[in-house]
Image 1 (cartoon, rainbow, N blue to C red):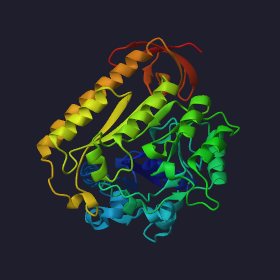
Image 2 (cartoon, rainbow, N blue to C red; image 1 turned 30 degrees about the vertical axis):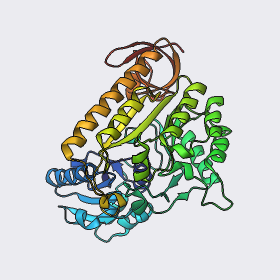
Image 3 (cartoon, rainbow, N blue to C red; image 1 turned 180 degrees about the horizontal axis):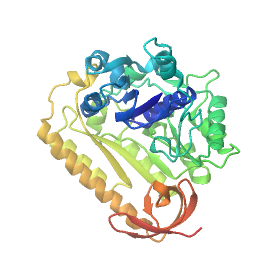
Length: 422
């Protein structure tokens, strides 16, 4: 069976897609472009209206270019508004997140698929092995948790992903064993609410306990943490990353807004002062660490004063890159009921201004790294290396993809330029 998978959204969704791909390969499936596939899986996101629009757009395009394909929609948009997707051309199945793990078995048992389509004819079968480079990823995605029990006013994800559910430590370590056997040298630890890891287990555990177990794993994988809520980034985790060679010096800590008034309206359980102290402590202990953040612009009630607070906060921040999201109403969230909506033109203007500061922060960080030597992993056929502190460096070498190297950063032009020194 020829298949294609199109993934929108976060690393958790990307990890889900790789799991789906692993299952499809185990039944003899093999990946092809969307215009050649018999089965196309669209793994949707619904964090913004733009994400919803992107999913609808790609489904319509595939229906035009490959009218014989069976299109299956899953993910957060499919969970939130299944009927919207079911009405789109050539969509035969809409599968909620709660059934995503069983999706492949459900599809293969469907009587509308012939035996040949279900199990393949033996040509091109790839088995269950997922090698570096699958789905364009040289590093592995280690999903240890899904779901969220928080109540942020703008977020639809708790209703599309359900309550927090953690993978037992033994299962996580077994998954790391498999990643190492498959040849991966780096893994990103990910979850919908990563910092809540272990709270639902019996006996309870914690993210810190999991990280300590990963530190002592016998493989040589470098672990990189995905997005971690500020209140969950406790000093012990910062100290562990600072003192251990098993963890990349990279923190992604979503702030969302620097105005305490806005944080309270968003139902975010920290203040901008707390966040400032946190990132300052990381910078003190890890001078070369990457520190990323997320910002929402145009949340209901955001004034010019709130916006200027954001601008002022960021200019003096040790943050090294930003992801900026224009606010959009998500049906079913508390924020949809809030008055004083910010006009769309104002949201776009504010988004451009915040992104411009993000560009300046990234350039400042890149400049500060010139002359340093960083551990890195080669990607893109060996012509680019991603450093432990999350910088892409163009190199000239005869190396293949997925090689661990030391790179000296020489210059910062349109991209960083470096040389391999070992």
